[in-house]
Image 1 (tube, rainbow, N blue to C red):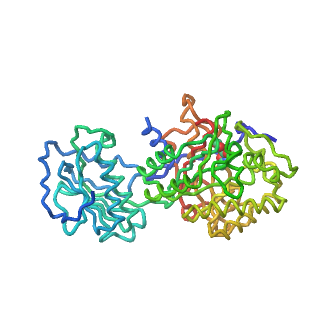
Image 2: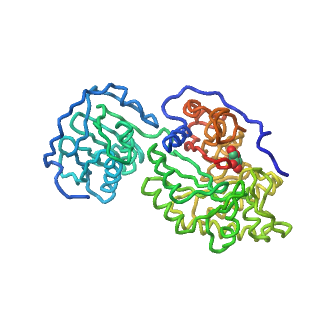
Length: 489
Ligand code: NGO
């Protein structure tokens, strides 16, 4: 049975007033728009700033920060970054030095300044940017920070290095937009003064990329990760397999990638990541304080696997590769033990390449299976994921099974997240009608789908994750995730 997405009944939700940041989707929508020498020396060494020839900026300059910080206080003056500025880090650990280096790498091309990195052995000199975990407030958690800007100094204080990394993204956003250019720009590089205190309302700030419908290069994914980092996102969900393609090499079942990776929507060449390339992406994400969450979608959305191995099909016949965009027609043979040996091998290999604690098993739209078969499959796979030492995540359909309290359901479309919460599981919010990046903005948007409606930027930004599904409260919600499905991309 092939199901067309157009006839789905979408349960829309009212738009709520924003109390701070809520819509992860808007971050990546803005990301899409954006797509158009360490030295040990004292920071006391005098670095006279060049005389500022600019007038103080208005308060509003501190307001344009995404995600919206917890609090912003302006003090109506300005800081000017000048040629002699240094980036001071304290303590001068390798990790903090590399965060300082990251900031310097972002600011050097457009400013043309050398921005020496200095392990701070005292109060930083005027005109510097100072980043430190000394005195960081534990209440700000891993991703929180305080940014204080005076006419003399920009300082970020955080409890953890990851918080410093988020804080320097705010610095990037506060400079004039030309700071992001790759060639030297005239400046001046002015920031309004004030204090920003910031930590996420929800710890999970995710985005998903579907590399199965269309395949993307390692370079493309790094660019996606760079944009995620700019908006302080911290979870990258990589949808690695679907009907149209299997995109990760599995040594014990090599046809999956070498044969099942050959197709794509519309008949393109497809492709797959070698395990070394996947590890390169995981390491790249780690440097951006982003955890990779790999998804192997099952038991449905598996045509590429079924085409690669006849023995995964109940009738023992491998179907042809698939290049259309229908959903709900494929399923692994869930009554066959070979299927579970296959799942265990795949999960073992992926787990060994993935330092993060999560494995996403998909679980969506297995429309050809009866509910007893589906539930048995999910529960058995949950045990396999647990034996691999990982936490299972699945699309909300998995809540039909008995979930461990450590398992996580990802809401996209129904009310099944309620069932997950009643079992003590946590929820990631990705409502299709608010957070799907493949939904068009309006009828004139050239790419994308509209089965869950149109999503204007404002709507994507202002929904409230704690009131999206009745019975799923703020304390049940780990956070948000904006999926970019790529049937049309
Ligand atoms: C659905 C479906 C995906 C589609 C997507 C398109 C989920 C969880 N399963 O979301 O296979 O690509 O919609 O919008």
